[in-house]
Structure formats: C-alpha cells, structure tokens
Image (cartoon, rainbow, N blue to C red; front, side, top):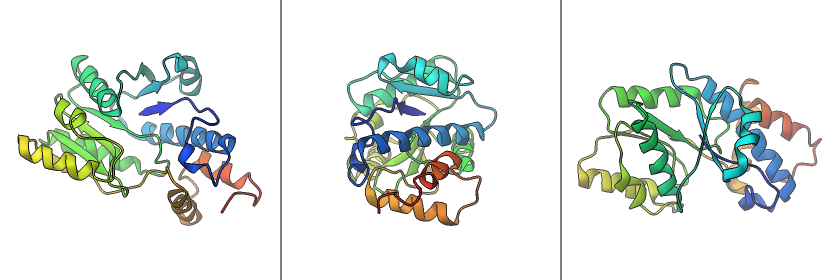
Length: 218
C-alpha cells in the first residue's frame, strides 16, 4: 500500500471543500485503517506500507506494527511505483502488487485475484479506476516503461498504460473496476455505498462519518 502520513492542509486537498483540512485528514486516517484491514484479508502474502514522507516510519509503525515498512523513493508517482515493485522483486518476491490507500471499500477478493492472475501467466495486472486511472498494479518482473513513460494523474492513465503494454508485448490482466475517493462526487459515492453495504465494510470510515452527528457536509 502506498500511503502518506495524514496532515491537515496536505491530505486529500481535493476534498476541501466540502471538507475542512482537519476533516479531510481525519477521513484519510480512517481510509488507512480500513485499507490495512482489507490487506489483512489477503493471506499468503507479505504486507508492506510504502510510506511518505521519509520521517513517517514511526507513525506507520504505530498504526500497523504487523506490517513491513519501506519509504517511497522517486520524484514522480511513476518512479516511486517502479522503485517499489522492482525492489520487492529484487528482494525475492515472485509477484509484487501495489495498491492505493484511497479505496476503503475495495473487496479483499480483488487483491487476491491480482495474485491469481499473475500466477496464471499475466505479466501485469491492473485494477481499473472509474476516474481513468488504476487502484492497483501488480507485476511478475520489472516494468519501468509502463510506470515511468505513462504520465500519471490524468484521466487516460489506464488507457495509455494498456496501449503501451500492447506495443511492447506485455500480457495484461484486468480486475473488476472500482473507485478511489479524491473528489466530492467520489465522497458522495462512498457515502451512498456505505448506506447499503454490510456493517463489516469500511468499519473505520463508516464510524467516523456517523460520528459527525449529521453535520457532515453534503
């Protein structure tokens, strides 16, 4: 999981407004806790938090003492993802998967399926996001071109990644689409999902939203 230490005014800024900086940071703290629970639902793999900033190791050690920790390295998101995946493979992993920390209702079965696709022969597995990006990428070998040559944080990240993969002959498997929560519309989507989802889904996020006693922005 790639994660950033929550800080008001620096975390989930695209949710401000409707949220204040403090509320956005508290909400993301809940996203982190729920994502950790999602990861714990996937057995037979090593669980690691790739954190930023560099001095955040203590925070994440306290948050998840049962997880490994590694700092994010690189100037861009693509560089950081490439470095994380390549380092995991170099350390002996047969498969390496990186997911976001912005999808607190993601089914753990989707992550397990990513490893299944890689074991079945895919070179790369991607979890499409509704905003045109992806919530997860997994590999069986380094894929620097897919991560460093495709501009990140655009509405065409997934499309561009698939086009480059086809060009260079990389076998790609796709997971079911999901969503991350970066905007007010996505926050509304999350609230609507939680209104009908089982009580075991996104426990921390659900509890925090309910704790606002009806004062949550609409």
